[in-house]
Amino acid sequence: MVFQAIPAMQNFIRGTPRDQQWMRHAMALAQRAEAAGEVPVGAVIVRDDRLLAEGWNQPIAAHDPTAHAEIMALRAAGLSEANYRLTGTTLYVTLEPCVMCAGAIVHARVARVVYAATDPRAGAAGSVFSLLEDTPLNHQVMVQGGVLAEECSDMLRQFFRVRRKSSGKK
View (cartoon, helix red, strand yellow):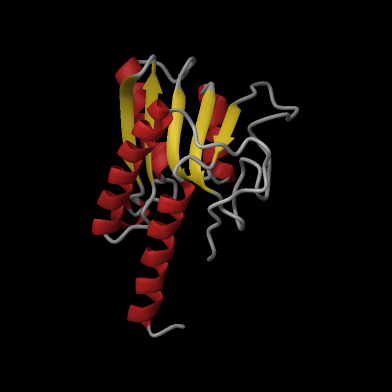
């Protein structure tokens, strides 16, 4: 799987210093996932520059195909806020959300998604599908891709390089 650091979308920018700070927090969570043998993806949910919840990939350990970083963070935020609606929040994630995660983001009414690396095979925030912005869905999410993209892409590439090498695949 090839992860791209520079998405083709027009809304690619570096992000604000705050965006970079929260993305670095998500990257630390991605490293936690990697240390557990999971694909290194991390996510945080923030409202008014306050951390509400965090999550990292856990589908292998949890025996749960839905235990993506975004879903884990959304679940924790819902519990933290005692509400499944997470209006006014920003979700930072190290890899572009998939279709499942994008659907959950829309249902939770997240206001903004900031992601790092694009996912050219399964991305649902503009790479393959565009389920968050400019859709007929009842909720639109502002999307910003590319924040710390190179660093997050490198982390993913290195993870899969090691995995392929240990399995004997090229």
